[in-house]
Length: 443
Ligand code: AMP
Ligand code: GLY
Image 1 (cartoon, rainbow, N blue to C red):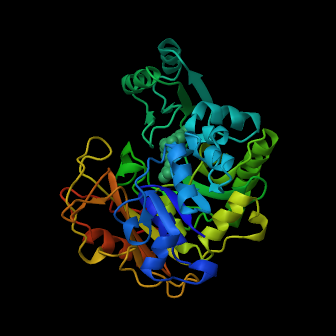
Image 2 (tube, rainbow, N blue to C red):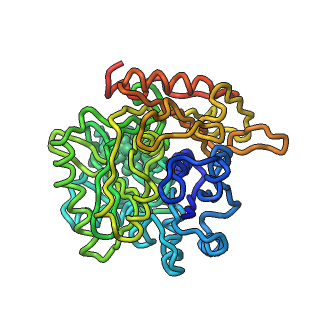
């Protein structure tokens, strides 16, 4: 079957890589030329070029995607980012009879509107931080006066690529942020929650769902979780503190009531639902829903998947998840994001990249991978929005340029492999956090 991956990030590179591991009829691996005939990316990047065929399509143009699918005989579309989902791509594909992994526009509002998501979780008894909504500066001023000196979290209601949130106790900073958001969108304020944060993913086929191992992202730019919020600077999987008891509690309090609520409201959800969860002293609290896989979590999660990703996504898209349960290897994964200078504020694009020994990792030069995990790769480099210029020089195209993933039987091995690989990625001003996973696994 031919599969199309929508997106151009490192998450989509990881998805395309996982999809390309099996050939027709479930055969393992396959020559690069064969893989490129069954996995397509729109638009993809210089990394996906080696394992898939890139299509120059606008992912937020549902008509263009549908007609490319019809032309190429695509049997499944896996939608990576939230933008195309919020633009109704899954609805357009469904209307044309093309199976899609990703929810329709109505359910995508769980991410595209934090205001809608909060009302939904309140309606269905999903525990969250205490939340207030504002549409005027006067109301925000009153709230800030009442909460003077207290740490609070302000959030833009609409999509913001991980940058629509400010945690602060500085009234002037909060007011400035709130004023800028209110000029274009609704604003939410939440009590500041303290605890361990984790990313929980569940595949869903509209009725049945299956939980995947929990991951931890590192949202802050600086060491020790300091500095501004980013889209995520690294992720680890699995988490030693997310034991069976913790996952049962999260399932009972958050995951199950969310899916029950969706069924009740007729939101047929086919894809992956991402629960951002804070484990507080009072129990787990939902921070947010995302209607897609996490980035960078996916880059650490998918290399551990021992089942075939294509079959799982197809089962979710076709309402047959009950017959396809995901299995994972017992390895540990550490993913380190290599970012552009200045990210998450202003950063240059088009920087020339030298990959050194990392050239070919998760690309055309990658050796055949045994899907059952033996012997799996030791490290994988996933590209985000990279491109080759006419002279063949690899160039950056975004803020979070690469994710270097290390895999191993234990934490120190996975971490060392990730950092050895990240160190091979060279471009002017390249930087990464040196402490990914440290708070979770110890040094
Ligand atoms: P969100 O986009 O809602 O996930 O927020 C981005 C990040 O801000 C989260 O991953 C948390 O690290 C942090 N955050 C969001 N809401 C809260 C909250 N109520 N209390 C503490 N931290 C929060
Ligand atoms: N890593 C957080 C996100 O994908 O939203």
